[in-house]
Amino acid sequence: MDGWRLYTHQDSVAFGAGENTVAAGCLRELPWKGTYERGGTGKVPRNDTLRHYRLTQGAALLAVVSIRYLRMKDRLEVKQLILAPASPPGIEAEVLRFLVAESYRASASLDFEINDDAARDLFKRHLSGVGDDLGPDGRPSAGGLRDLAIQLCGLSIEAKRVVQFLHDSGRISAERICFLVLSGTWPLLSAETILRGTAWPELVFLGGGPCFSEHGTLWAREIGRQTLLAESFDVAVSGSRWREVPSGIVEEWQDRPIAIDVDAEVFGRVVRCAEGAALDLPAKWRTGEAFVSPSGRYKVLVRVRSVNEATFRADIAEAARVVDALGAVVWPADFHSLPSAQQSTLINVARAAHVEILLAPVATSLLTGEAVRRLSYCRMVRG
Image 1 (tube, rainbow, N blue to C red):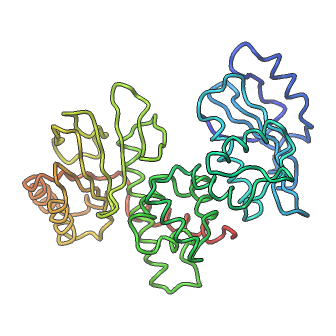
Image 2: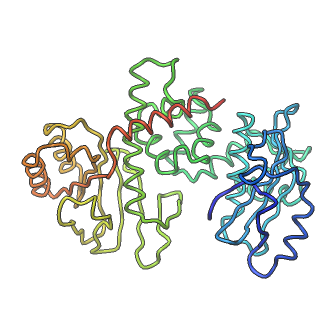
Image 3: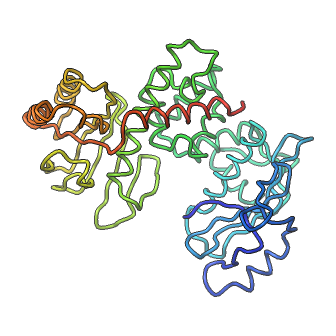
């Protein structure tokens, strides 16, 4: 899916194929207020303006939703929802993820006023999955929406327990964590890494900030850098076509299934390929011939280190100690700043320990800058 974007007068109408007439008839019911993208007024609409968003896949239109933030009631109004006939699986969940994220973005809470029968039925079906229903006034309860948001994130059972504990202890709201996951600030596997692999995950989701000690802010930045390095590995090993599922990322290519899960104990990844297959990575990640595991299982450590031989040797020793099969350690591109002789020595030491060195094509300085940007956004999020 191509994601959500604001609908304009210039956008073509195509629900699936051969059903343009029906779709156009539905869309004429939308009370257009003007265009919001380049080619129109060029202005982003205010939250309290009626906005129309579309979800597409290529040239096909999958869903259209009209929403508006009601300032006096401090909740998000769902004015209209149109789903494509015979829409592919997962579209309803995608619509709900978008609505939950927009509700929190506008009001720092999860609260809806649903004025559309299709949207009302959609909420009822999915709320029943978490043991809740719409109230007498036709609105979902706060607790039901919280449980629904956690379910929509696709977190593992262990990560859900951590989210619930953080919420119950008052350290950070579950709604805030769900928003940061659903909005893509910290994708699913990154959120799993932070929740399951760190002692104070709330510091990362709160962005550190001035209310914490300098040590806490620096710690959040360090965790952010390591998580971003892991993200680059996830994208590289899974290829360009992938989707997120509760247990990790699974490729859509049927001839080469790959699953990635979080190893919280060592802040790394566990990759499962086909039997006898090596990690399929671009050549620029390699430092030599690829290792091949007969079982297709690899444990990968992700580390952002200062550029000196001692820390690199320590990472190799750790990888050799915790890896129960063939494994690897991922470092940033700063490794290339070492003298050639030291690089060769470290590569040979790693191969002798059955550990493959993988080098992400990104420098530590870029990881630091992106971590600071994401943490700054986390601080600005209300709630």
